[in-house]
Image 1 (cartoon, rainbow, N blue to C red):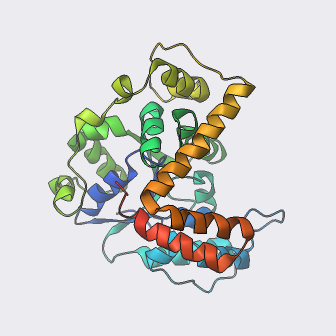
Image 2 (image 1 turned 120 degrees about the horizontal axis):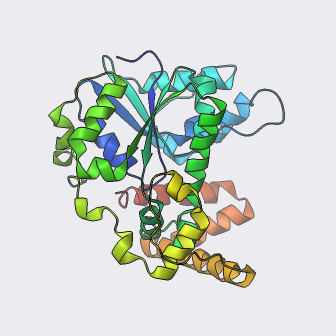
Image 3 (image 1 turned 180 degrees about the vertical axis):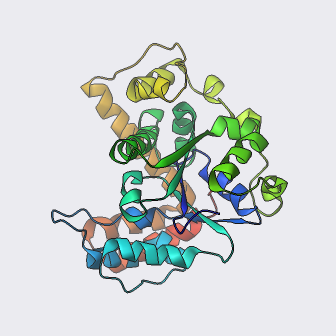
Length: 311
């Protein structure tokens, strides 16, 4: 079993981190606490050390943190504060894993001996899936969080080259889950257990479906592929994904403005569809006017409804 440091599952949103979480949590010797990006979202500071008081205040208003059921620990610095939060996540006699989608480069400052499982998915499928989640109105903006996650992983590798990192491709996890999970378990320090593939019996998630791999081949137009691949650039081939052959599209200033408008309206349209016009307007008004009770009420209601769409 690993030391006191948790194993972090790091990957972009829509890369399959939830499926891997469910697989790991089905192992009798392993546990996964779920998404915990709030651990490393402490405020930026111009001083030497992050402000733990500001971090505590920020967490108190974080909906994901509130849903996690964790209590605010008494600690005088950010790193001991984070370690105290993680200690609440542990289940006796089980190795702890935690999912993150960003700020990977901050992990070693708090957990210098941590292990990282880097879950990677084709950015073209991530971009397409982001639209379905209502996070973007087009693939050009839908790939942004994939780029940010991969840049964060690069920053981690460059700043802490001795960190142990295992990269697992989503496509391999779906195509041959037993082989991929055997690698994951060996990296963590536990034997593979077939129960990991029974996660669908106790969740709303279906078993791995090979038909979901490379959906971009049939669901993205040539221009959409060009927009995504043009924006991702060299990261595509560096991560082992061959280009589609579509002509790269690098939009000009007018096209960028059009894509930004399309993105805003697409996100707004999906938000209204999911959460209703009244709740959407309430959240916008609360956020833009700075009326915190209104904004907090709307965000909590939206978060409650959002859980119904997570998949």
